[in-house]
Amino acid sequence: MTIGNRLSFTHNPPAFQRRIARAGFALLALASLICTPPLSTQTVRPSLSAPPAIPAPGGEGSTSASAPASAPPAATGAAIHGIVKGDDGTVYQGVRVTLVETGANPLPPPAAQVTDANGAFDFTSLPAGPFRLTLSSRGFLTRSVSGVLQPGENYDAQTIVLPLAAASSEVRVTASRVEIAEAQLNLEEKQRVLGVFPNFYVTYDPDAAPLTARQKFQLAWRSSIDPVTWVLVGVSAGAEQADNTFAGYGQGAQGFAKRYGAGYADTFNATMLGGAILPSLLKQDPRYFVKGTGSVGSRIWYALETTVICKGDNGRWQPAYASILGGLAAAGISNIYYPASDRTGLELTFENAGIGLALGGAENLLQEFLIRKLTPGARKSNMGE
Image 1 (cartoon, helix red, strand yellow):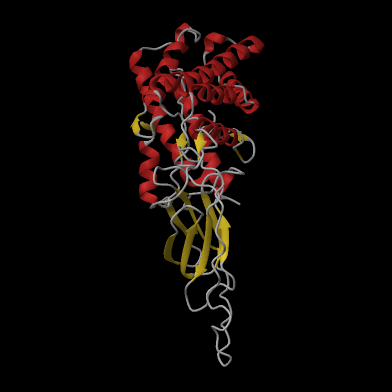
Image 2 (cartoon, rainbow, N blue to C red):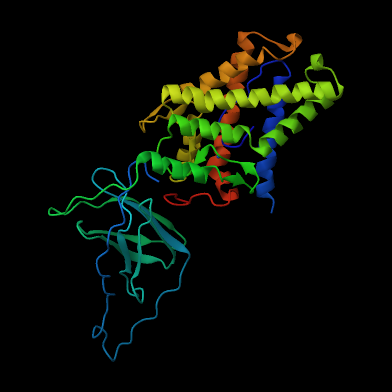
């Protein structure tokens, strides 16, 4: 099973429980391996010019000759991040964000940066204490955000709205929502756990742009033909041959080829049905949106409930019809190519679908708390960890 696909196993003969058990052991093995040492939905504004930097507090003449300035505090590894948007929800690129420490020991010069193409900013290696963020750009009202940074804290300033000034001229849109989704998809197709295992069906941007039908098919096809997918199917087929699972296939090269073909058909059918065809028809997003913020309890609940709900292309949460129906449909198709002695009725198909949902919940928990740390290049913007 591809990490992050959120699709259950599809075939439903009695030996299915053994394959489920192996999948469960694989998830536990991945967790134990770690313990021992898966852009905005709106259009993007063009780069906005920034006004002059705000002078540092305590400028020339502000310090008495008899009272030398205090030394700056040592960095504590704390950080501040957030996203800047407009009144209509459009992300803003090029907004100047100035960070000033307002405590007894201000930062020597005010730290400043401009927001990136996702409207995001990220200050790192900061000292603890009170701070003030000032956001400004020509043609927009200046905003300030204040707070207190704790040692080692990753402070989430969340979404900051920067309103247009009354006399602002019209701003042209330079990127469409489809182009934003394409850029995000290209990043997701490079996500690999430990640099090896595909982690394509996961996004670390809670406001990721919805995929078009073409992009959903692109993602499903890319996952299906990935070399690691072929290898994992071969490992599963070899294990089935070793314990004579699906005895009707026989042994030898012919038996292995049949088991391999059936295993790959399971993966391909489930991925295409639950990750492309039905999501396109029902306008649902097949990806797992990592929450990454909030209490541990809220994140656990989120990971479990997203096995049965998903985000629609309209950005609203809804029952995950595409994923659930895709798994059931693929299970029904599997009866065409599995040995007659291993085909079962509708009751076991639903039973196995329930087991698949349970495994999906376990995978979501790993995505929420562990896998992002093992995925080089995974996006960190707007994440609370």
